[in-house]
Image 1 (cartoon, rainbow, N blue to C red):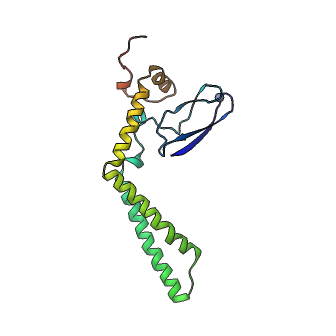
Image 2 (tube, rainbow, N blue to C red):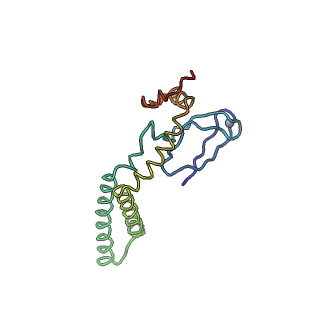
Image 3 (cartoon, rainbow, N blue to C red):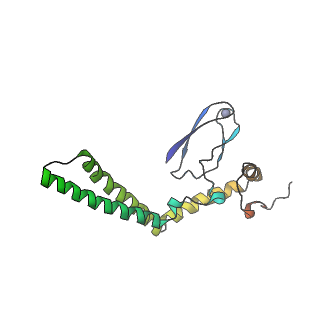
Length: 162
Ligand SMILES: [Zn+2]
């Protein structure tokens, strides 16, 4: 969970809203003060734009984990070298020795979440919410008007109330 903030272009009110980590949601927001709609392109509508690569691409985390691991080993030997040969170590070395294992663990957790299908499950929930929004013809029309490439299956959703 996080927060997003955007100034309403109509009345200038700063809208602060809670959002999920990947900002899955409608890019068309409604101002809490004036009730007008405005566009926030940071939001991603999964049914239209697909999922964030960081929630589907396990290899991304594998690569970053390997890089973090390799750099960690190098920093460790650098730290050992300077402490044993010169009797000192630097704040940079300590910072790296703390940050790299954290980054490594974080990447590995994401890697296993994708591999185990936990991430897919979370994505399926976001997609279901997204498809629910896509049932609103006005909403679909608004997305198209804003240049979003809406997949055909959402264009004709059965109604004939034209
Ligand atoms: Zn407003």
